[in-house]
Image 1 (tube, one colour):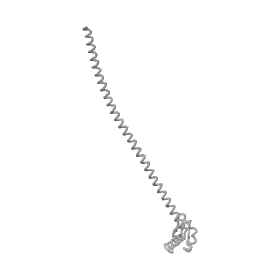
Image 2 (cartoon, helix red, strand yellow):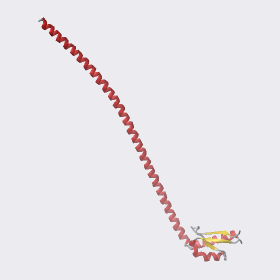
Image 3 (cartoon, one colour):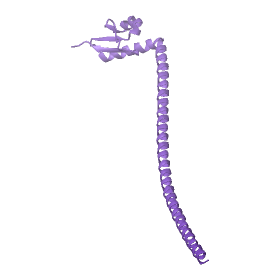
Image 4 (cartoon, helix red, strand yellow):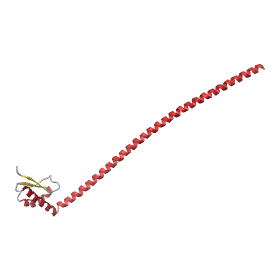
Amino acid sequence: MEEQHSISGFIEAINAEAQKRSRSLKEETQSAVTATLSALEKKLSADCEAQVAREAQYIRRQTGLKISEESRAAKLAVLNRRDEIFRTLIEKVTQRLERFCESAEYETFLADSAQELYRAFGSESFTVYIAPRDERLRPKIEALFGGLEVRTDDTIVLGGLRARGNAG
């Protein structure tokens, strides 16, 4: 029996040592798992923060591009509208000027302008220039100046008269 008791004591001692080592291994494993999880959580947190920062930067860049594009489109729309208004205005002014140039008032305007030229040049010899569109009025203008030379000038676009002295 003593042998049995010795064997039993030995087995109990081995079991006690095994349990002690098992607890120690469990504690070391738990400690290693906790440390690893903690390190992974820190890395994951840092990775998430970096990803959020990258995405925020991307969103800012995309927003800036969109604002830029919309601003450019708005400026273009304003410029196009301004050009449209300008063209419409020029068209209306041109039509009004054409109506005026076909009226009796225009003939009176040319006669008054001719008288001003005659006063400005006095007795000096000068040439009167008219717009090609006013060719039909040449005889009346020549009659006002009593034989002075009247020529057409393609550079007179809107109408009216121009004169140049013949001296020198």
